[in-house]
Length: 219
Image (cartoon, rainbow, N blue to C red):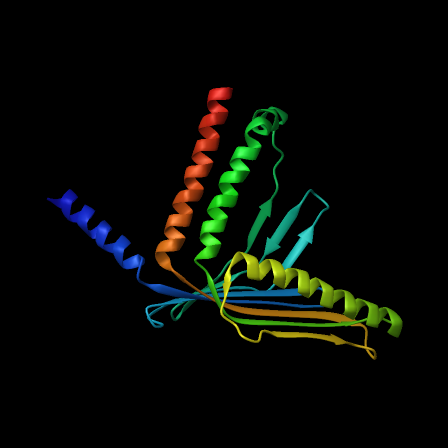
C-alpha cells in the first residue's frame, strides 16, 4: 500500500508540474572588470521563490583554468553565502579516441533535447543596454556600431530558438565620448512550465546514458 500511495503521489506531482508555470528573472550586469549575475525563480504566484546571486566571477590561469564564484543564495527569507572553486581537470587521451566516432550522435541528441526545451520557453521582457567608450572618439563610434551588429546577430538567434512575446524590446547602445569604459546590462524574464524542465532533464540524462553505454560497448 505504501508503494502504491507513493506511486500515486508521484503521478499526481508530475501531472501538477505540467500545469504549474514558473517565471525566471535573469539579469547580468558588467561594469569594467566586475560581473554581477542574478537569477530568480518564482512559482505558485510567489509562494515559492528562489534567488541566486553571483556578485563576482574571476578567472585565474596561473595554476590551470580556475573559476572562482562567490554566490549568495536566497530561498524565501533565508539567505546563505558560499564560495565555490571549480577547476578543469585533464581527461585521458583514450577517452577522446573512444568518444570521437560517437560524438556526432551524442551532439545530435543534445541538440534535439535543447531544441525541445527552448520551444517551451516564452520571453516576456527583454532589455539590453550597452555603454562603451574609448580614448579616441573615432574608435568609440566604431565600437558602438560594432555592438549594434552584435546585438542584431544575437537577437536573430534568440528569436529563432525561443518564443518571444515582447513587442518592443529595449535595446540601447550608448557611446561614451568623454570617459572611456564599458558596461553591459541584460535583463530578461522567461516563463515556462515546471514539467518541461523535468522532461528536458530526463531527455538529457537519457542522451548521456546512451552515449556512455555505446562507449562501454565499443571499449
